[in-house]
Image (cartoon, rainbow over all chains, first blue to last red):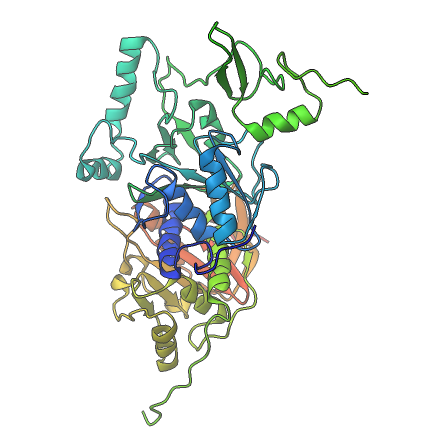
Length: 292
Length: 201
């Protein structure tokens, strides 16, 4: 794809990149702590991944290979647009393959294929403050983080149990990073929370509207909050993926008709395609055309 | 001084790509403490800076980041002002970046900005000229290290690691260190725990 003229490499000017880079370095040094940064106006609205894009633009180099996913899929509007944005403003190679990517920008999923040490995950974050719904004043949440006083969150989880019999958060499930900072993992399903723990890849989080970046260095302890008698657990499905037959991946429910027909398919499109390419089939796999 | 004109050494040949490359090395160094990162193709920097510490400043310092030099020289100050636009400060506590060219005379770590409990990111990053790196003497554990990492850093004052350990009592406050030697870069973020191993053999 041709790069567009008139922009600096990867869109942002160099001073902005330096400012974000310095924030990212402090974020890595203080795992889970939200570093304020001067978020810039981007050529797309808040809520479309402006934080993730600014982080990606600041770390991206000419030899990087970029993958962008939106809810696990490479083919949805947000993913296609951001991939094209960097192909045009930075001229970098892009890929759908999790294994080939050096930087993976994601909206709300972690790929099923385990990540490697050479990879960097960039998360788009709408609400970086895990205590924000419980305490709206930032002056107070900063103080709570400074004191590592996370009783509010434990009470919220306890009230879930009292009311519903289980912890009702299924996404953006709060985690404790390196035993110190409470962190919002962005709205990834809690299915993906165990992948945050001791991940070999560097994980960076960017919130554009809220002007915060934070990070989980590789091989860092990340615990999902729970109670001894209500241990953390991830979602399970009764049936495997209808296209590739895997029972280990996060599944999306797809409504097929108005008569109650539905199927469950992998949310990670690259994982599902790779498995189908390797010959795995599910209950709804297309019947191969007969050789003519 | 009789020489009003100080000849200026050049900065990065390619400011965009060189700054990105050096930043990624620094990012890798701080996210994988104890793992040496190679940075090559650096422009020469005026003393007391070395090519590596100069490159880190070219990549990361600007008008927002006051710089403190342990032993400032007119050449280095002019070079930093011209290429980075960074203000040079006399007090270590005011610096965002500090260059330690004589680590044996390193001021106490507490003399640098430690950050605030609500804003631990408002702390200094120290770029320390190391005399070399070995493979034993220190045992590193913490975020970014899978199990443990053993290495040695030469040329530091004997009580340096005691001051590092006392800094950890104030976590998450503290300074972050980047050791440079030749083309090598080593990160030591405040989250890394360092144990000094007894001198065996």
